[in-house]
Structures are given as C-alpha cells and as structure tokens.
Length: 248
Ligand SMILES: Nc1ncnc2c1ncn2[C@@H]1O[C@H](COP(=O)(O)OP(=O)(O)OP(=O)(O)O)[C@@H](O)[C@H]1O
Image (cartoon, rainbow, N blue to C red; front, side):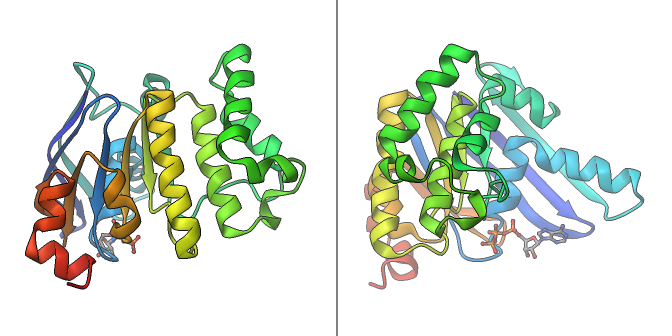
C-alpha cells in the first residue's frame, strides 16, 4: 500500500502542488489526469524522490528554492525523505515523461541497464516477459534507442522500468505523442502488466480516454490541486470530468 498525504511543492513562491493526497493499493491502477502544467510531473517526481534530489541540488548550487511538504508511506514505512535510489530499491520505479531512453544504446542494452538492480535470474525472466508483452521490440533488439518510433520508445521505457523489478510503477504521460491506436494498445498492455506481474501502477496522463477504462481509482489534478477523485464510474459520470475529458 502506497499513501501520500498533504503533498505541497513550491518552486520559489509558486505553488505547484497544493495539499495533494493520494493512495494506491497493491495491484491497483491509479490514474492522475490533468492538462498541461497541472502538476503531473511535479507529483511523479515527488513520489519517486527526484523532486527532493532536485531541491537539494538547487540549494547547493544557490539556484531555485524548491520547498516540499507532506508525507509518503510505502508498506508501513515513511519514505518522504528517502533518496530516489532507496525508493527504487524498495520497488518504486519511475518511467519519466518523454521516455528518456538511452539513444545511443540498443534496445537490449537499454533493457539490461534497467535490470542492474535485479538478480541475474530475475533479469533474464523479466527480459523474456518484456519481449512477450511488447512483441514489436523483438524484431528491433539491436536497433539503437534513438532510431525507434515514439511507440517503440515508450515500450522500451516501460520495459526498462519493468527490468528494475517494480512493486509500484510510476508512469508519467506514457501516451504523449502517440497515435490513438497505439495509445489504446499501450493502455491494454499497462493493464496486463498490472494483472500479470502484480505491480501497482500510478499513471499520470492528459489523455484520459484510453486510460480511464483500466484504472481502479483516479484523481483530477488542476493547478496543482486534486479537485475530483473517485473510481472510474464516479469519474466518468462526473459532469465536469465528462466535459473536460470526454467532450460531453
Ligand atoms: N523547475 C521549475 N521551476 C518553476 N516552475 C516550475 C518548474 N517545474 C515546473 N514548474 C511549473 O509548475 C507547474 C506544474 O508543472 P508540471 O511540469 O508538474 O506539470 P505537468 O502537469 O506535468 O505538465 P506537462 O503536461 O506540461 O508536463 C507548471 O506551472 C510549471 O510551469
């Protein structure tokens, strides 16, 4: 069980996350939906620990003052001040926005890099799984990451995150820039990953339509605040959510 309470993030005096609380049970898929600049990446960085890291680096360099407040509990332990590496070892793995794969490494190398925390037997088993869940990667194993299409890069980014043996996978805008057909296919794959691997997933996304059917629970983020929350039926029947996300 993962639970964040009262998260606040200030960039200098600009409030980017305003008292956001969210929970994700083991094996659940939780959606966080919001427009550009709603605070999705700030939230994902805060959950994965990268925000704390950025704040420390900015402080040391005399740069931007970033302030964080709140608490995050993962399986009974307070982790708000744990480094990203410690959170990763505990199983919290971020798959960042815009993929951030290594463009000069091949598909297989990218995946193997992702598995550096795993035992060799786990890495071998997960590698096989990644090619099973994302068959298009099989044919391009030796192609450099920089030469992949957007959809292939996203499969690789998720595959690389899986190699790190996540218990909680944080997906930041996985559908960005992909065609609607690939968006739906990827959403289906995300659901299969949750079901087949027993991984909890928090997915932040602008494109709610393909993701909404696969979530157990969701939050709508606006200007840094979680303004609506509920299970998928509650969200899909909420008139404000309908008009903002489903054009109804
Ligand atoms: N380092 C920073 N310094 C100052 N303001 C920032 C910084 N990073 C983000 N912001 C601002 O914080 C707000 C939330 O940004 P964030 O990137 O979290 O939104 P987002 O929902 O992920 O949007 P996008 O879909 O564009 O990635 C925005 O107004 C953004 O301009």
